[in-house]
Image 1 (cartoon, helix red, strand yellow):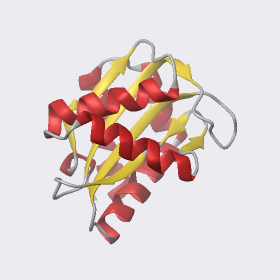
Image 2 (tube, rainbow, N blue to C red; image 1 turned 180 degrees about the vertical axis):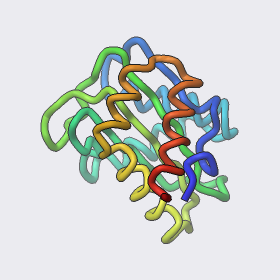
Image 3 (tube, rainbow, N blue to C red; image 1 turned 60 degrees about the vertical axis):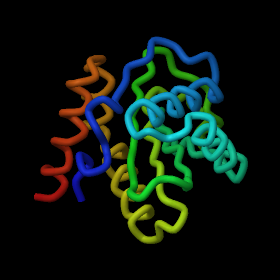
Length: 154
């Protein structure tokens, strides 16, 4: 799997501060709207609905919010580095500063799960997370995320 197949460079952002988990999800809605032509309000609503089932803060400062949406025909993603971590109700109760959102078609089956597993493996790698946290430049973050693909594939 290759992150660059569902992550565009313009969907990678550095945000100085999001005041809350809700505001972070709104940022993802705005990115999904501008990069993928999705309805930002629908994206935020779907992400919040998924969060109500259980938090997607997986620990060690990482969150993987995700949702299924109408009007999309392929899995897409967005990445945000927060310069100021935000409480995300993570399993380890640590604030989140790395967040990768996935948006999938309503009828996406195994492809959505494969993408989610791949992103999870990528952001579980301590070296990758350290590099991401040390490089607050969107283009560099995209390169780090997509270079990880070839390392994991080897």
